[in-house]
Image 1 (cartoon, rainbow, N blue to C red):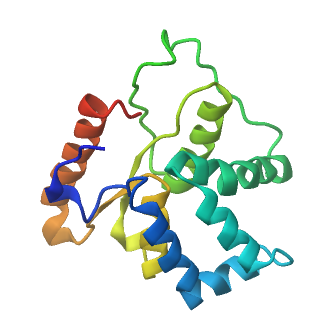
Image 2: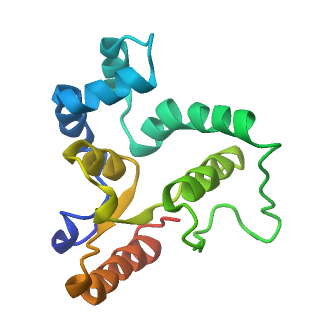
Length: 176
């Protein structure tokens, strides 16, 4: 990834950064507590080993979120579909725009549908107001998110920076 250094604090983590971030997450007692409550019966050490095996952000998403999201769909909806017939070339980059209904879940569902259609997952902008713990800040960046500051006095500047990151990823990195 060749995103300029000025975006280092807000951009998604690169695959080269993931091993260190995994270790930081694994060592975080708050992260462990949440994982053990969400996945009771799954030994944390096994989960940690699985994290360490993920070499890319996409591998992490497939290993931890893909199945979880499809299980959520099966429990809460009659189905989830994606008509990609308007996308003339599935190897090209596309920009998807969503309303603000559920910034995380909407993009997560879109990502699993993209995977099922042979495409890569999306990168999303997420406001720092949703990142109430350090482990969440790290996890969303592992999950290909870039972070915007939501304090009113910085909103215009943050919006511009988020747009710069998104445009750079789209134009120069071949990202969706």
